[in-house]
Image 1 (cartoon, rainbow, N blue to C red):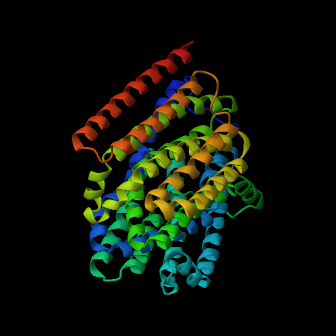
Image 2: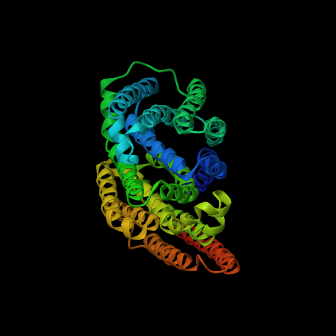
Image 3: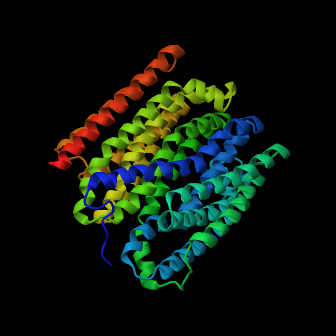
Length: 477
């Protein structure tokens, strides 16, 4: 099948459409992750820091299971859908792959539950918690597939609504369990799985097409594109596990809880990254080959500017945000916010360049870059966490994302010697300098930090206006 060009002849129209879809998908991400962030103040008061740290460890295992069970099908289906005639066979094959992977992984975690618990917490008796996490991760894989069907076959608004119902169900059940039980972590994970499964079943009924029998050729195409994305995603999870394990080993579960709060604050940026990628991937995969690189180059500076401005604002106001979200007992989380926020900016650049690479030359380089970044996180964590605590863990996270982002950006030629390349380099330099200054001002008076936040917002708006005018003039010429 031919690949339609999204956005028509006028690329500015396509980018405006992409921006609008990004905002709507980000609202969906706000529902999916933002409501979870809003519930942090309640969880932080219902759970002790060590229980919150254990819950985070379980969530990491669930994420690993979801990624492995998904086998990269989320992006692979988005890439293959415009290139295949029978979408019923495509979805039937993808569902079969995910179901088989989920069953195998639950069995593996059940068998290895004690070593997993010892590695992540130092207590093998917590093994049942991670079996529950594996069950939740299997459900997460199907939820991701259902939401993928919504974004590809419905509207951004319906994606936002579906995401809201998933997270609302999970959080309602989780908070009720945390309120009623004295040792709630295992029950919370199972409750999340049950609530998510109910909503996911409704999403499948409404948005997933009738499933046909799986096809070996379709399996091969899905695996060829999606399989390299699995180690790419796992690399970040393994890196995060290494960071959290180092904190638990060199500090304690209370410090792990503080890191979890800082990480949740930084996920405000991850919401925007997710919203952009949900809109960006179909947009780019359906573009004509000649349009792919120019469109990526034009979008990159705006993405980095928006993420960078928010990262600077989060850093400047980190003290107040931590106290509001989690309370004074978690104030140590403040030290990890600047580097974690900077890491999310680097992750945004990596995701954009990774999608570009997948559209023009496959996904193997993406996997290698992510593995390299994850290795950097693991190695640097061994040194930085012992000397700097959770701030060192956050710095190790940032370094890993930067290495991967630079590697993929270089191989895709995303940075050019033209105007778009100059905009990207200048924007990245300003964001780096602004984050460094914000980290320096973190402990100054609130008045100074609020003024700096307003100046950042004004500067970002001005830069966005100049970029938009420059892009419009060049496209018109």
